Image (cartoon, rainbow, N blue to C red; front, top):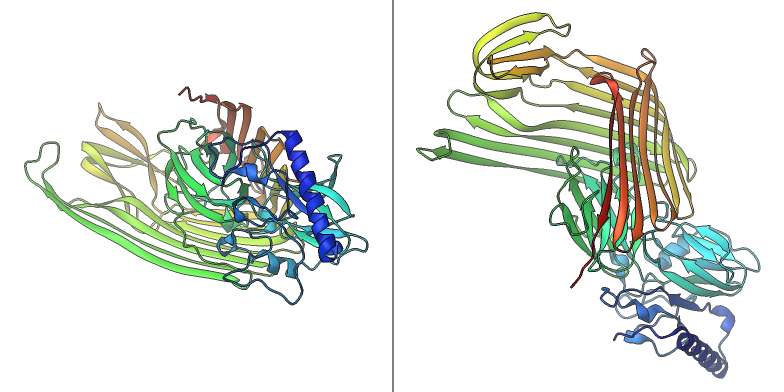
Length: 589
């Protein structure tokens, strides 16, 4: 059943009539009203084409017995000896029974596990967490004068004095957020119903390693700008943020893509009360979307499940023979690939341990006495342990190993003379009439990365979030017989190879990421890291990426991206890349 949004006067009259009717009903039945906290659910105007008709959430009193769509929106403390039936009764705070998709337990269980002591002469407001309270935006409690009275993580109770309040839930996006009108009485805790949806976007590269790639979210079908998001490096102790949005259809696009995207996008449908988990595959160099979707198994994860493990293996083999085919070289080709992925995660109380092994190799073998040319060759091992002393701080230790499994060859378009130089530039050898060159043997280079220090996480309200780490770091690269192509001269038919030398850095490590959304139409994200080597302090390794987005109107937005990088092993200059983009979209018909 759909309702059109009435005028404000009609809304007020209807709400007043409903409250008066409910109070009379309570008086007639002799019920103790002190056990009840009344909730009204409200929202701003939404397009009539929205996936969920949110007009039914405006000025609906929970004491009103006539609820649209046969949905009972009254929420109060249940009797101590009564629990909801798993098949028939509605779970308090979970009107759509979507908690089966959450990473947290159902609202009733969360409330029972809240260890806070209830202050005297106060009542409580409880907003359930879909994932983890630290990963979700805080909810805000305001009084009738719009003054902020309390802020709290989801999954925790905010205790306030008796009275009427407005509770705002959800991500600070470029649109309205769910808002609930709550009446609080002494000694009772109100569970706010989860009428919104949750979305977790895990960003990975084409090797399934988690990265901090950026993306943007646009609502459908109106293509309204929602906000800018980014992935997280779980192997370094970072947390994946959870979006709390209105139910409906959304489009996830690569950062900077137009709203009328015909490529670099995926779509996702968010159901009310449910948590959706999306994996987004990005090209690390271009930021383009290579694929994505809800590919993870939908399993119920509760706090009792404190460890996860998995092993995945696979591969492919393809043989191709061509004879007299226009546009193809006559011969026989064998394409092979194989991969192994294993992971283990432990998250119990304040301890967090994460390890992941990824081995993937693929390439082409030509049977005319040509080498195996790899198209992908990765061997990675990541380990992380962290301990959370308090909600916002804890020590960490990390280690990673990276190499390749097969020799690296590069094919040449004809016969070339290969000139090999050492790391100082002196010529070591010359080889004539080569159609391919060997750049490295197996397991070259070998890279080790390790770090130890402290992690800081802090969230202020729903508009500021910062994560930082500070400690010691060590990086070592063993470039065993590793060469890079320095120059290719097609006119002289020569290729120059330069040998890469081994290197190591040991020094201070500092990194920070923060999200700033002071107002709904402005978002700023910063990701910066630096390693200050003790033995070469004048040559720090520095990397910074800044993204800013401004929503100019419902049909236009302005974005700015800045990338700074300095690494003397690549070039002894600061690399600067920046762009500004204006995007607009308007549907005429």
